[in-house]
Amino acid sequence: MRNYITRALYAAVAAGMALTTLGLAGATAPATAATRSLSPPVYDLNRAGYISSGRWFRFVSTTLTIPAATLSVSDGGNMLVVLQNPQLRGAPPAIIFVRPGGGSGSVSWSTGQTLQPFAMSPKVGDEVSVSIYNDQHGHLSFTATDLTNGVTSTGRAKIGNIIYNQALLIANLDARAPAPPADSRLWKVDGTHLTTSTGTHGTLTGPWQTSQMIQTNTGTATGAVVTSPSGLWNGGANFGIWLRALPVAYTQGFAGYADSGGPFRFVGTTMTVPSAQTPAANGGTALVTLGHNGGPTPRPYANIEVHPGGGAGSIIYTANAPAGNFTTGTFTVSPNPGDQLRVSIFYDQHGHYSFAVTDTTTTDTQTVTTAAPDVTSKPLNSASVVAMFDNSAVAPPPADTQLWQFTASNVTSYGGYHGSILGPWATSHEVYTADGTHAGAVVADASALSNGGQDFGVWERHQ
Image (tube, rainbow, N blue to C red; front, top):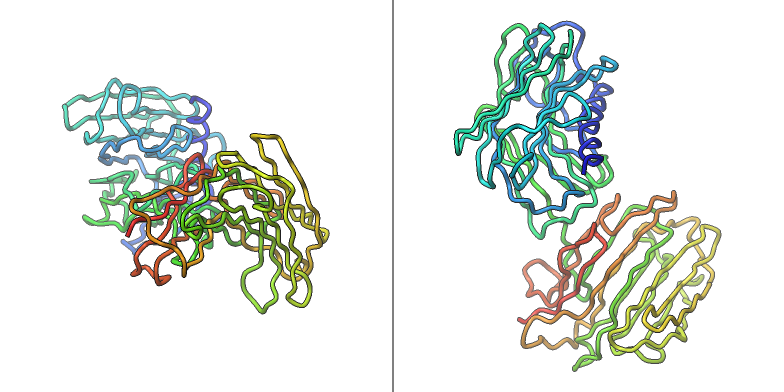
């Protein structure tokens, strides 16, 4: 726990340092800029919120509504209110750190690595007002007040002659944290006020430069948004920080998750082999793939299919070959319903695929190697773990039915970055509807990702 919090505190400083390269850190003397609109957004791998820069700030205050703890401690979701100057080497930031869920020790202050808890124990839903004040004579004052129950606590630190040219109100979140099924507000931030060393008062919008910080799963503008702030209102004093749902792709036959970008050299998952269904089409087929999307056909791809019911010939591999042909075969591994089956596809980046299957229940295993044509010119920019259905033969079940359970799903890029389904790469949630659009009745879909983006189930839906 302590190590995670220390990383979060250092991350707040790193977030501010990223702005220096964009010219938002401010000069060495107070500016006199007029009120202006927001500067371009900044993208980050672990943080989302707002950053104000370009003046010497002596005071920041805001009111936070304590949210429920819907994320694990390792996933974060903590709120940080910060004054800092990343251009002054060794200058300690001033930080107030607030955890979701409330309770004793959930609101703390710091000037570096060690958290000092405020003497309060807010509950979920309480409104907590926090502030940081630099007296410009070498001292910081930290104050937290639970407005719901009237408890106030303070802290004080000696820092020397430090000026702060950035104010940050940001949430810190692991980019691999499970995405919610729909956009969900994490923090409600109200009544934010800033004051400069010369006594100029304002909200987040000025008169100084302010940028949104948007968290994506790559830390860049091209990544999928993980967490982002709402627009400002109440004169720039209020906003929310939202956990964003994954983009949804509607299909006629697929339910699960697909990654894009990469390029990818490995995808693997563990699945529980379901019983055969009646009709057979209702069981679908587990499909694990590496491939190239976009451009003319034929395109390189490599698939492993697993059919419900198990038995001989129930696991099939397929890879494309030149001129649009393909290489295919069956594994000798013959699982039973209920067996745990680990399957993976590996591209060695030298012209070969390795298809591997292990029945971890029986310990039977087999690896097959085939050629991987066209991959040099068409990198494997997609990876997916889905269930595939014959959309002309599925009969709606009398009640929602879980068909497949996938766990320990992993993806690796050409560059050797290891991740779950969630990234760092773009991820989409594939939903099978009757007409392949959002307006169609849902035939099958995937549950929300859990365990850091590794686990999910595929459900056939009653209509």
